Length: 111
Image (cartoon, rainbow, N blue to C red; front, side, top):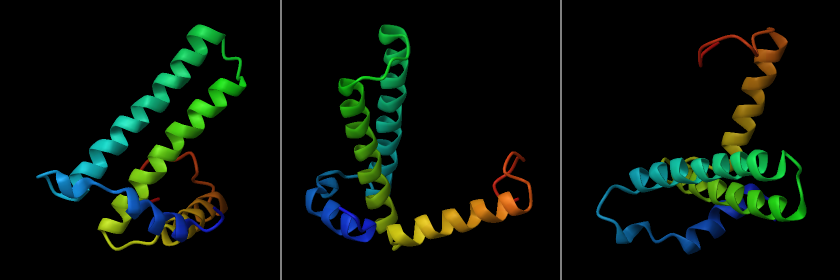
């Protein structure tokens, strides 16, 4: 899928957060944390079990976990009325500004 906003709309078709009693944004944040942890686990096991050697199995596993992260990010963004394309455009603009001002390695969110 080439269009990230289309992905965001399609992701909604598999959203079952309404079954939870918590606010949807809490469900998405907790899911995002869990999936981020799973990516960390995949990397840890890559280092421990395969001495960092990336193979086809690892690539499939990490692609799956990164996809899960994208799902939660897209649903969280939707919850706040933000299109994914808006997030990606904003992020690239922010990073370019930091690079142009030579503050990519500085500290703080609003540099």
